Image (cartoon, rainbow, N blue to C red; front, side, top):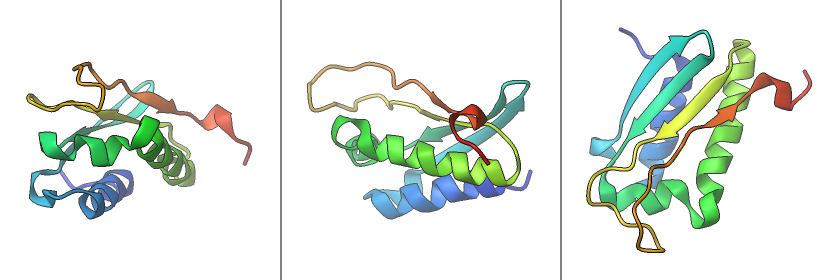
Length: 107
């Protein structure tokens, strides 16, 4: 299956941020809630993608809203925390998907 522009966008941006771009992988699923892009990456790169206080991930989700708006789709990003990754706080937890939803802005 060919990659869609939203999926290509995520891969392009994330590969530019991380130290292991060859290990960046995305999956794209579509359902009644919209598009879900699931991001898998090397455990060492989690901090670069999440950013301080989640600011990098938030910025990526904001940009995905714009990409999704072009095709009038709701695009969500889920970042899968790989085994062995450590956050700055030292605890492990799942990173949830924050909706990038069309209701957040006016066209």
